[in-house]
Amino acid sequence: MDNLVKDGSFKQVALRAGLYAMLIIFALFYLMPLFVMLVTSLKSLDDIRTGSLIGLPRELVFDAWGKAWSGACIGVQCEGLRPYFWNSMLIAVPAVLISTILGALNGYVISQWRFKGSDFIFALLLFGCFIPFQVILLPMAIVLGKMQIAGSIGGLIFVHVVYGLGFTTLFFRNYYISIPVELVKAAKVDGAGFFRIFWSIFLPLSAPIVVVTVIWQFTQIWNDFLFGVSFSQAGTQPITVALNNIVNSTTGVKEYNVDMAAAIIAALPTLLVYVVAGKYFIRGLTAGSVKG
Image 1 (cartoon, rainbow, N blue to C red):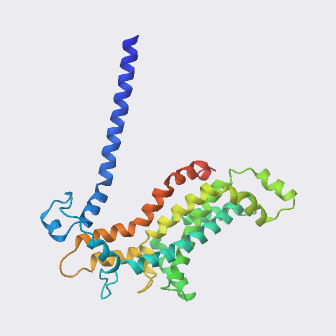
Image 2: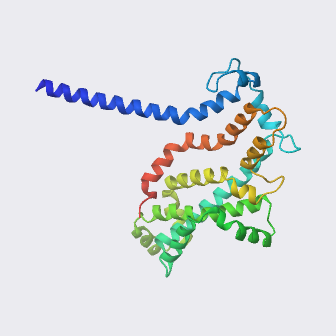
């Protein structure tokens, strides 16, 4: 009997050790590109030419980071990523706030204030989530032109709000549908109106799904390239477009360390968001955002 217990314990320990070893191998394999980018950004050009791809730098050099931020050339302008970083911030922050608020209101209406055709409208919004970006480029360009906001920061904000509305509505609708309808009925009996019920009952309960929506929208908007390159012009381009131009417009010696530093700078905001709020993202998903 004791031998069986020992054998069972040994098998469990061996299985657990094997799983951990497999996870560590997968994690190292997944993080290898980031490691190569980071060490390359800290090398001099001579070190890059003579050293190994995955080798550590002989001497830490941070010049590439400074040049990527404020000195790298994009065409004839050598301003680095700095102005484009702030362009992306000016686009992402308002677009995230507006699409989150509108999505919350839409989800609230569709889930709790049933009206004729509500399911059909929700189906159309859901269908919009799966339309490829390329399909809407020409119609959106026409709309932006008629609204006279083509090529502007405001135009890009509008594009991201419109395209993100289907996702934010889906998130909030699936979260709000799990909230008992009796709360709404009781509030109506007490004389509360549409907005009072939303602000006093639903919004205080929405912290988990708000985090999910903000992380999702910020990541999608910050990492977008297609809308940025299609609907922007000089002075309003987001950081993803600038990064592409830096990598593809280098003249003379190819500065791989600058390219790697620029790529990491462009990815830092989304990386920071997931590091800080990643656990809240999982909690929000498990709190009801995928129900219904």
